[in-house]
Amino acid sequence: MRWAISANPRHARLSRGAMYIGVVMQAHNQGEDLSTNELQVHNPCMDKNPYPVPRDRLITAMQMSTEKDGLETGAITQFATAYNSKAGAGELQFIELRSPREPDGYCLLDGQPLYIEVGHIYGTQSDVKRLLGRTGKSAPSAKQKLLSAMVPLDHRLLVPLNNLLLDKATKTYAATRVWLLIRSAFPLWDCSDYEQHLKDIVVPKNHPFEQIWLLCGQTSAAGAIRLV
Image (cartoon, rainbow, N blue to C red):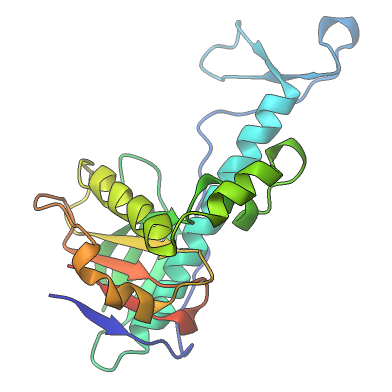
């Protein structure tokens, strides 16, 4: 069964998200004992064995984690707004982000626990870099942009969408009721475009999800399509 909802940003309540860090990180300035390009990462379970981590790698990892959390939170709250705007759909409330092996988000649907796993599609690798605002050496090259522009839009989006559906279908989660939410961040396609290509969207027969949804843009007004 496939059906769509068009959103009217009405009420998606966002409560304060919880974020957890498994180790305690401490920055030390120890002169010659620690170079200026290193942080001392301290594991409380290994008090006698602190180990250096290059500062740029740690900062990059932390930035990526923050970006991932922001994307997941944004997708779920956007979906909640779209979902809640549909009469009779129920009330979906985002509570907090969770860590593997749980799905990405813990929510309540009409007061009952619901977990949501989140994925994103952007188009080509050049589109990914552009839409995520990559700069410098991480920005797409002129050649990459040209090659990306030559890829037909349906292939540009449906291939990564089907690949993501296939990948998520293989996952297992420490939760009983899980929905999959995929957000399309590509600005040139909306729900009507995806609806015209529903026959080309391949949902694997076996997967761990109660429902699968496709968010058709980066605002609640873009709406969503239920794939399963």
